[in-house]
Image (tube, rainbow, N blue to C red):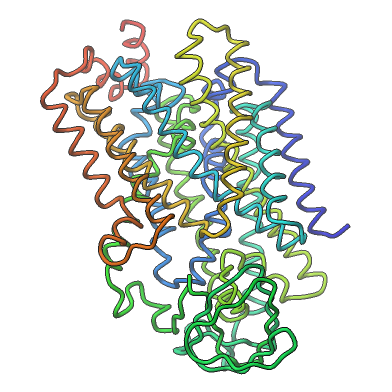
Length: 569
């Protein structure tokens, strides 16, 4: 049994053990959805950070740094800054309002069942979009470290998450996710520092900031798992399946299963999906000649900064705090936790450019965190590989658990129970929750099997774009503007959510160039203002909902007074 198997097995056993503890203490609907609203700030911040720092953060950020260089900085910057807007505008008022889910807020704020159903459907879209990259991360991790098929990793993690959520609910998952956060932080920080010492450069050594294109540090053999189109920047001699060949400058089609051997010092060809970037282009956020780079960065920042407050699996966590001050403290602590974590993927990305350029050849830069520890060798290298694998599994499981709770809640609490069984007993509602968790997990596994061609962080960025376009306007205006009406809120969510989803689907299915292609790939710069505009314009022509003044007063007054007012309404 390898050390990697032992470490990953330990994470799985710990997940089930802590989840079983959740089974023992989770008995009520409140336990399953909001952990009885009795989670402390530090513990809750650990749990939120655990589910927020997903495969996109643990694997994807380092892969994007290796692939894009300085242009990748917008992702972690937006992910962290999103908690500033959440802290300033949403956390405390939302906690004072008191609800289980975003659909609960939508119905309670506007007294509209239709608004609940729309919000619940959007929760499903966002949840499944965000679950897909977690499934992909699990598949590529097991494929690389254990040599098993991609689909098996997707299925294993999917089944594990479904079991943990179906039986533990929110109260059990809170403990699981807090454990996973500290596992991930330990794994990525310790591994990054060891790699920096072992592979780092001294005077005269190789550096990721060299002006030229990446070159192979040693003789390297690459096996292509799938058919790949390569861009060859310099003519090179390659041994392909035992036969010497010359690859000229230009495009080369390589069939699946091909083995290509490169000599030390050869300039690495790059998969067409990545494109060749020299050291200068890699170190600047907006390389010369790149059109619409600033527009793409601005749209990405809008999506990540505003999308954080619209992520259903994050927002439900603020309902689990004891009161509004605790919710604010939780958001502040999260900023510190997330900020520290994001220091380390940059080390992996920079080292990957120097030491594993073969990932440019295959297009698998998402696996740089898993590939680098192998270069150390010996017991230390095996230990670091095992530690990184454990951290990666923690990322998949913790984020997937939070997302699946939101999906299961939307299916059971917001759709099925509200539409068909509004008078169901607490026991029946818990049964619906568990069935919803199984169904939501099966859908996520199925979509994850189809997600192999897409970058993990790109998939997550799209989920943020949908969340920013649909739920950010609802929350900002619903919390701070008394005139927001049910019709305006409904139309704004539909227009924002559908336009963002449609743009992303067009990007996934086609290849659109120019300004339109840039806007379709990162639609938030258009879809978020559009959703705000629709909500405002249609609300101005409608009558404000009844009790709007009392509801806003409840969200903005001191906690104890809000509790008294809630009893009066």
